[in-house]
Image (cartoon, rainbow, N blue to C red):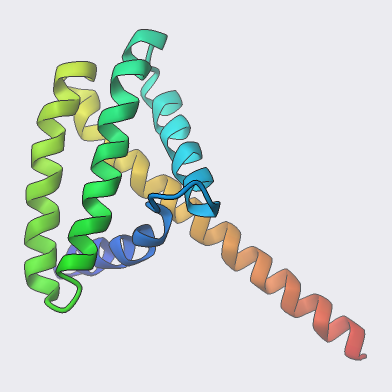
Length: 134
């Protein structure tokens, strides 16, 4: 259970950077994450049109919650769980019970993929710099 909370906190900290309200780089990542989740859930066009605004509101609320409670990890974890439970109920109205739970799994998968991609790019950059010095 301790590992779950640690993983959750790590995801939230990295996720806060993705859920930007502007249309800059965070906005593109947010759009791609929404598209990824919609595809993984197998949403119809109608479901996707209903799901997308709810999910974007969730991302904005998650970002705000993370900022408001970043000084107290335990309170932050509690607030995030409350937020997810609230939004799970909203997702349930659009995508059904099973897929409403899958949203958060696919979100975690996307974040881990972005982290891995970033790490790979950093490793490649480091290797390129080493190659130039030799």
